[in-house]
Image 1: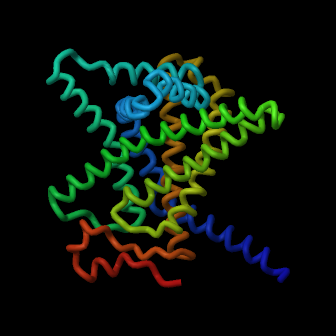
Image 2: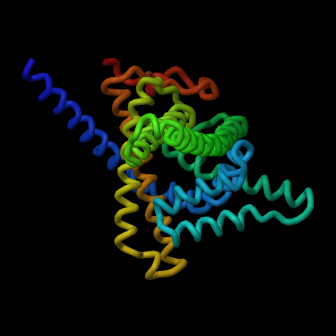
Image 3: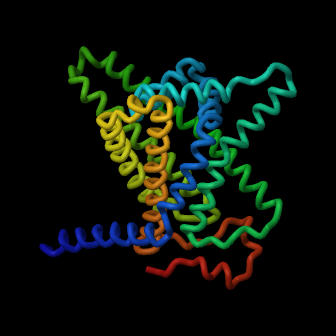
Length: 309
């Protein structure tokens, strides 16, 4: 009985060791750099669409205000102002129906590119063979990326709902259940962490062309969300002390944004590797490709099966 905690600790240590080794073996930093590059060009249209989707329920002003608050809390006022200017420029359509349609199409295409890049990286992490189904597979991948773009709006709705619900409960129950503000802030953070875990679970489950088991996905998503929150706090603390944006002006604000995106891209890809390692070593996933890939040979499919545990 006394050896059980020790064995558990060793298993956890071995799990993280294997995850980091495989991440480095997958050239994770290079994949993260590519993902950060696409994110830099996709962030403005992506956030425009997210605000538009969330605006249907909460109104555009409330949605954009929540988004601005999240960005400023993480990156500082200068970087937040730069990103808000990028969003305003991307949302400024020319007059006319045709110009508006073209503008919306450009927004969808630009916003989806980061998910196309992420899907490619996730497929490589899961050792999925390149898609050879032609234009049909390409269309399916694009539709999947567009769905993820719209899901970003739903995620912003979730953040607004959590924030509103906690504020309402704090106001109503404040007299009945006196509590320090940090209690409500902690509750808000816990609920936001759960929501973030759900967002990562959706990414890891639906974006790659494999079928990981939900039990495996949730474990990886929860660990990714925790690392994401810790990384967000650490990067925010560093940036607030470095004052890079203040020293370099607008260029510094954009450099701050790129640094944050690159770091977070590494967290997401490391989380994907952790999901794969957990599924292989402890989980239930047989890495079967999705139906759009089932025209491959039996041999190529069998190569994607995880060893039984």
